[in-house]
Each structure stands twice: as structure tokens, then as C-alpha cells.
Image (tube, rainbow, N blue to C red):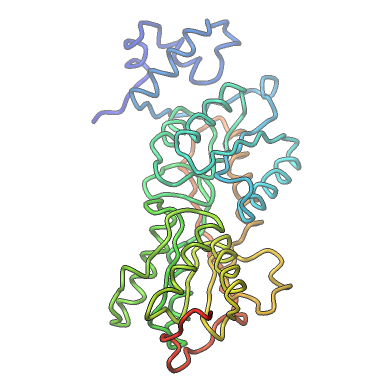
Length: 349
């Protein structure tokens, strides 16, 4: 397919190439172009899949000095910390931040993008839900300064900063296997979301490399939050042959699991070993601190803001920079070698 040009857009809606160029370069108001014409140009560019050669550069005098941020769940400990870091870094650059909560819903995410653009933000940092990326790519292709952070999917060709979810999860699984665990439950986040799939893929690959059969019934869970960890933790304890270890794919899931064990009078790691993807807030107050994969929140936030400011301040669209950071595996007190007969455990009365 040939590259869509300004001429294609102009012919599609019946305006001049000059008008199209001015709209896509953020000069509609400066040249007194009608609002309906501006909207028609933007809509046509989106529908035709236009990829601009330049960013929509705004001169200093017309900038709003605000950036938009879309976050999947503002109550999530890791995500809210990342949002806070981004806001503080933006403030250092004399920018305000407008935050939208997509509530882990792709349609809400799309509506949030439209809302932010209607408020004339100078750029957007988006922490995607992670199920679809075309709408994000379309916005970047229109020339809007944009950075994807945290949940960065393959094929999303825009500036981004995230972590290597596969390698982090693989390191955690290798540690559990090295400690002698073979019956390992994986309590996942939102199935079919890319970030979840990468962590589950690592779980499967780690078992296959050791020639350990994969029991699909041990890959459980279907949502974010403590409720997921709590319900799945309860169900795990009803199994005749329970797992000797649990790999929880978020800190909220981990908290739900810990609640189950507290209610049942069980103990980590004496009854079941536990590893968490994401560090747990206030873990220093737990009787047994949880072994965890810690994500580089501050580095991610700093890089996301820097990548966005480079676009906002540049007249030319450069090749997108895509950064992948490593997690830090922290061994604490929640993993021991499985005890003989441990898998025969039954819930106490």
C-alpha cells in the first residue's frame, strides 16, 4: 500500500493541500481555518491512515502548557506511583497534567484520548489497557506528541518506555523451580491483555525448559485487583493436590492471596511459597516479607516525560525511541523448598 499524502487528504474532502498542511501542523487557528474544516481534515487523516513527516509543532505562544495522561486504574499502587512521578517531572518543565482513568476499558481509553485532544493538550502519555493499539497508533500518526508507558505492545510504533515483562517473570519462575517447586499456580491479571500474556508465556516456557508438564488448571484468574487473588486463593485451597507455590502476577492479587491465608490460619512460606510481580506497599510490616519483582517506577516516569518533551519541542518527527527497562528480583522470606507431603494439605476446620 502506497503512503497517504497531503494531496490524498485534500482530494478526499475537497480542500487545498495548503489547508491540510496548516491543520496537520497545528496552524488552523493562526490561519483562521474554520473549525468544521479542521475537524474534517483530522478525521480524513485518521480514516486514511496518514503518517505525517513532521510532528504537529505548536509555537510557544499557542501551547497550552498541559499534557494529558491516561492511566488504567488510578487506585493501583504501582500505576498511581508512576502517575505521580510523571506529574512531578512534568511540573519541573512547567507543565500541568490532566489525568484520565480508563478503568481498564479500551472504549473509555479511546474516549479519554478524544477528550484530552479537545482540551488542546500539547501531548499525551498513555498507559494503555493493553488489548488494542490501533487507536493509539492513529493518534501518533496524526502528528500528536505521544508516549506509551508501562504496557507497550508489539507493533505499536511510537516513542515508548516499559519493562521486559517476559524476562522478569522468567527470572521469578526459574527461582521457584531452582528451589524445587514444580506444582506452581499462576494467578494472572486480565487474560488476553499483552502484558499478562507475556508473563504467562514466561511461566509456560520456564516449565517446558525443565520438562515439567504444564497443568492449565493452575493458570487461573480473570481480572485485576485483590478480589481476584482472594477468590482464586480460596479455590486453590480446595484442591486435593494443592500447589506448593503461587506466582501472583500483580501486587493486588498478592494482597488477596495473603488475606486468604490469614483467614485460614495458614502461613507463608511454611504452607505455600509465594512470589509477587510488583512490589507490595508497606511490605516491611508483614511478618514474612514477600519475594518480588520490583519495577523501576521513577526511571520509567522520568523517561516518559523526557520522550514527550522532545517531541513537543521538535519541529521534525524523528524515528520513535523505544526503551525497555529491567525489573529487579528481590529475594525475601516468602519462598522455601517444598516440604514432603505438603501437596496433600487440606484446609483446616
